[in-house]
Image 1 (cartoon, rainbow, N blue to C red):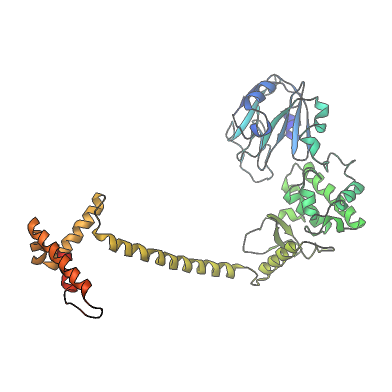
Image 2 (image 1 turned 120 degrees about the horizontal axis):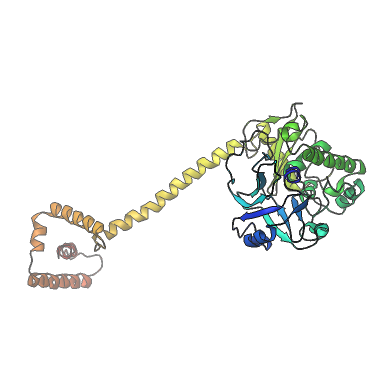
Length: 418
């Protein structure tokens, strides 16, 4: 918002360049061509923000209402607008990669020309046009469905309002803070910071806090959000004792601590991960069974106990590998048997033909001259042999059980030779 006010408010958009994107534009009922036609030639009078949404107030409707998604950003060709961190590489490429629209603005005589670009690599951002008067944008979708902003709506988001909202629901307090329909603008790290500052466990139910806890939570919410905005999200300017500076250790083997020695653990409940300092954020009310289990597992991992920890993971991998090997062995055995039974089948391609030829060659070497004699038999001799086999089989069938005619073996031999 700071950079938009400084570099775009009061400027006329001389040209709008767009990239077609049926997700970033189309998901909210707008197209790139519509956006281009609507914005070219307009003068930007003001900018506004409510939580994760922001908008440009033009000199006539429609007005663009924008959402950055997970990693969208607004970049300027004349200034580094940063991106949630101080140690980032300066922008050298222009237009920047993954741009969705680009404004070319008018400049004063003593100003260099510059451009404004909206970028989003993951296509989770949203660009829409809202055709109402600029003063009524917050009473229109999608803004009207979102709760008050802790920075711009301090007169609405009071201690009393927060207490009433918390007691009207029975949900984990962090889930309540993250729900944009309740409060606009609170993301995951902000919620963790607020709860750490307020000494509140993230999974405790929202309707179980007393008046004093609600006031402390309210003050922490306003303080954290205001500080982040006032410093333009420059983390180097955040207080040194903030959890945010040390919370990024999820998935790493080493344990993480705050400068005061308090240990940070990561609890995952319902697919949402929270960075928590359990020695500080102790439960004063009930939580779900799932949350209790997640906390026990997190403490077990950090204390080196075998609570579904690394040793179990290794054992599971070894067991799975052994089972896979045994399964492959079982699967391979039938295939080999089938291959042996089908060894005399007629080849269906050149490769199988070569295998068949090799097999015949080996048989010839084993049987020698006898096989040669069989191959050289005339059709008349072959018919005679078949008739002889039929007589042998008939004699065998007529023999009493338990007695051998002495002809079965010879019949099998003759049948093989023919």
